[in-house]
Image 1 (cartoon, rainbow, N blue to C red):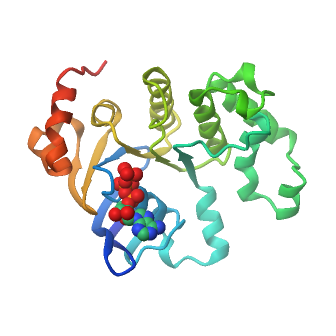
Image 2: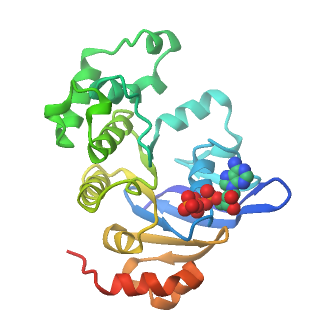
Image 3: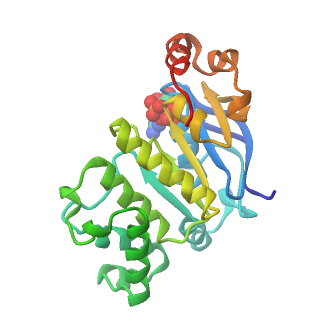
Length: 262
Ligand SMILES: Nc1ncnc2c1ncn2[C@@H]1O[C@H](COP(=O)(O)OP(=O)(O)OP(=O)(O)O)[C@@H](O)[C@H]1O
């Protein structure tokens, strides 16, 4: 398999005191589903933000689709970003706009500023947006305002907006943290389909170890900015969970004991 993303010796320092990431290295294959887990403050969000250059890492290398992301020129960075879709915990939708308008926003990265400002979308783009919304079970909500949707529906619009970009990879920062268990399952099922059926690489930050165990090809465990686990869910032991979560691990292991993957 080919590596789509390679991270080598990545570090991120905030100010003088906070080392959010410390010598992080791993690679992710085309179409792989990778969960990043770790306690609060471990550096999960910082890692995702460094990958699409929302923030700049302090040291190290990020190679995405053979492009040196940390040294890429501004024009090429725009191209890189069109290939990386972002999914956010709080959806980041425009409330007063409809589902389809929010979805079409995903195409803006490829357009001129003027076309974007005028909201000029081709018929093909509109048809593709409707097709993707239907795949996500939102065909009856296409012209509804975003603020009339449930959290789970909003997150499906977030996924649709990322998919109309035609991305190679999705970065999902706590996509189910604000959702009830049923909606969370729907979102995780869709993300898994995106990876398995569409061949899009998915990198997802999660708080729930049980969810990571159930859905991932690979789990990366981070503690205090360092990768302390990188492997398959079925190989993960209680000791690994202890290394990732420290003193929080006991509760988590107790919770996982009652959960069976379906
Ligand atoms: N913009 C910033 N300025 C200063 N420090 C920051 C900034 N962003 C993050 N940090 C610090 O970097 C560390 C890692 O934070 P990060 O948000 O990446 O953790 P996380 O694993 O995503 O946590 P959570 O699960 O709570 O979202 C924390 O100590 C945090 O306080």
